[in-house]
Length: 155
Image (cartoon, rainbow, N blue to C red; front, side, top):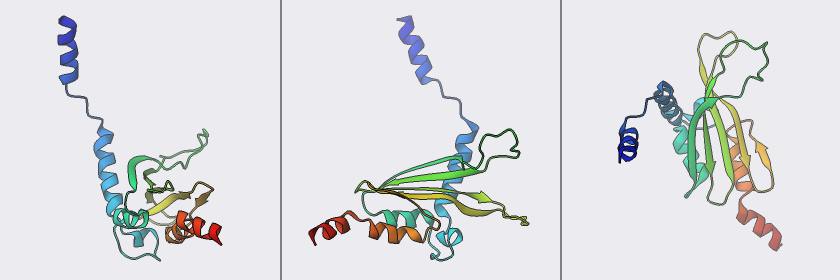
């Protein structure tokens, strides 16, 4: 009986809040609202989250998280903080996947931080395609669409 009471108290006790949870949630919310035009000037002024949903299509599943941008190698020579990015993983209904890391960067000789793409990749069942610009994604989605594969096999 005592064990059950202790377990009940432990489960009911509020979990300690990690101060990074609020920071991460705020960062993710900010990235979702960034205009894709700021990330790639060839794209229109459209919120990043909505643009990604449009590109991914109906039935896609998304996972958003904040983590480091993968910029450092772990060498003791490296100094400074590791940039913080928002990673979004989109799994399309047909199994293809999109991974994009967005973070703030201070260009050389600039005092202003800007949002930028640190990494973007599109994965199909046959290949991994690194995207240099977000504008490349719509073309890759069309080029690798599974219906396209079936149409080519029928000819």
